[in-house]
Length: 288
Image 1 (cartoon, one colour):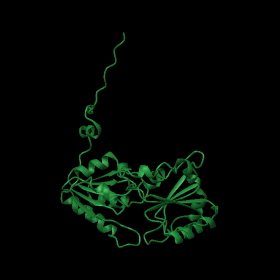
Image 2 (image 1 turned 180 degrees about the vertical axis):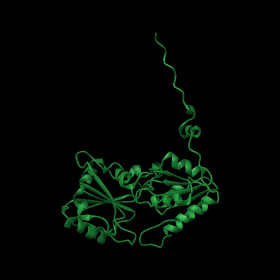
Image 3 (image 1 turned 45 degrees about the horizontal axis):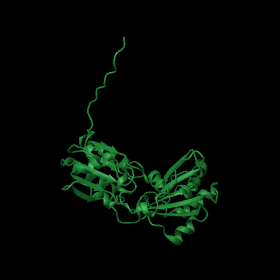
Image 4 (image 1 turned 90 degrees about the horizontal axis):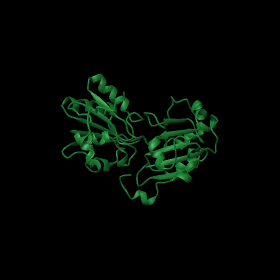
């Protein structure tokens, strides 16, 4: 005996009648409760690259504590009445102390605020999100992590550079180009890094690029390895510069590429001539 298939039960039913983004109004987004901190990644710059959870947080928070790398255009989507607090850290410039930022998040949460900690890129990719959530956890403050698109992947895509490609590289290394002092990180095993992967993606590396390039070459990296410097990734002001490992230091000294920037070492950039899709006409749209 056969039975007709039965419709599976659903905990909720979506809205299939409202147009566009209005359909999302009926979705069961998690509640942003008072006394919670949400650490949210805003993506590499273009507002359109934020996640739905990020936008939901912006519409339900009481206060936004935001970083220097957050595109100001994103802040206009914060709900009316929410407070905005700047807590940006930029290398070589006067910046809030990290401990003070973390303590401020705790104070706001304990005051019953719904606290949105908005960070450029992804909170856990060189964004100090690990440190901040660790402090929150030790203080007993509940938190949620909302990942964002990191510039080392999404930013590269806007430059027509695939972070991985089976014809170029099956591995990629992500690293930061400076430590807490602003100098080239001393605790990185540069001898191993130099030849460990065909492609190296470096954050915050422009200032120390000449020194990094010299160390990589001294440890076996080819002098003619391509180096691409991607500034203001995914933004209308995006700039892409090309040089080699041997010429990287001189290029930076002569041209002072704008920051924030991502530096790509390796032949992933070979695809750019074919895949460079983000042209002038597309940049006229500020959403991305």
